[in-house]
Image 1 (spheres, rainbow, N blue to C red):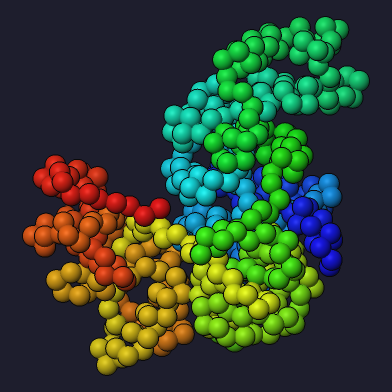
Image 2 (cartoon, rainbow, N blue to C red; image 1 turned 90 degrees about the horizontal axis):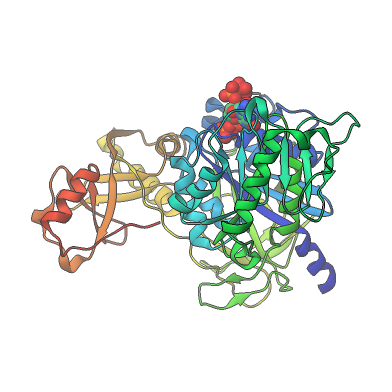
Length: 525
Ligand code: G4P
């Protein structure tokens, strides 16, 4: 590709992830998006994978057992001349650090909220990570076909609980059984839930933002209530501000119902239009790298292990940051300086794994890995080394004490542990006084994967004793006194030797803070 072609290709990319609390409708909306993209022909396909249609797959055995769909890790399709990459962020019990790290590889996020429930715990956690990146966040208020909370409350909650301004792009005209349609403030039209007698789905609004009075719906009280709401929004609501949207300070809000496929296409059209294409990446040394830099480079944000149990191979997911990826190209692994030929690559599609011929910034390529890569690694072609900014560390919430089952096999235990920790599969801590091993994770699945891999890859059986959920807070070493530690606030050190407390609960943390008001406690992301 020449420079212009590269620029045009990058401009087409829209790479994003959907964040939500389990059951808010992420799978359902993803399916609708794939339908619009022509990737699947009927709804229910993604779900089928979730529940275990996995015969042909050769992915990680543990994931098969659990029926987690990893082929849908990255879904790519074309829509309205744009190339869409949706990166999956697993929820439920498969929530892990990978979920967070995936958010480091996207250019925008879509937040799906159940309009009956509002903002829930997992959405809040994921939002925090996205917000920290300063990328645009689009909101889809789902399940409008059911009675939910007042739309004005839902918008206010964005500000109150997440600290982000909401701007309603469209507004529900009723909900549940009384759902008539959406009042589209941007396109200046009403999108009907059910076609009118003339078979129309979209009705234009006049200059005053009103429907033609001969339209039967304009006689409904729900319509008049909507006009009141719109007047209120126009007068007292937030003003639309694209700049704020782009830096993640304002979220455009779309209402709809994924299940009945209402409002989803409107959302997609607007999203494709407004969401950014890949932009500059800040490197570790502070330099900025343009996505159309002629030299290929990218970073590993996720490693999926043992996809094929016969080969013990792994796949490193690389987000391309610049240049063009081509099969068979030589790249250097920045951390080690090792040069590798990338001739065994796969690109991830929702319905198949196809060998990638070329890909540009914004795209994700999966590279077969025999143990070269670590999470966060940079690779580059060309002469000048490229090192992407380090991925942030996330505060684990679940902890386990871990030991080798067979004391005679300490060597393989230590080797496996060291490698898995280095790879970023799990966090490791040591207790201050006794040097015991404590594992930390954000989701239960990380422990299970750890145990499985220790056994299968390092032939080391481990015994894990749950410590349960804890609040991890780092403390400055100069303020530390070992007497501060108790069973309710276990003192450990991280890999770098930095001390932290694992508090049993909020109460234990507050008690500690009251007792030691001068001690500053800090959390990672
Ligand atoms: P998730 O991936 O975020 O966990 O949610 P998922 O799409 O699986 O949806 C969770 C449940 O909510 C599903 O019902 C789904 O059908 C329902 N749902 C999603 N969007 C809408 C919507 O717009 N309106 C309504 N009324 N329901 C919606 P389920 O009964 O748990 O699953 P299933 O047995 O129907 O597949």
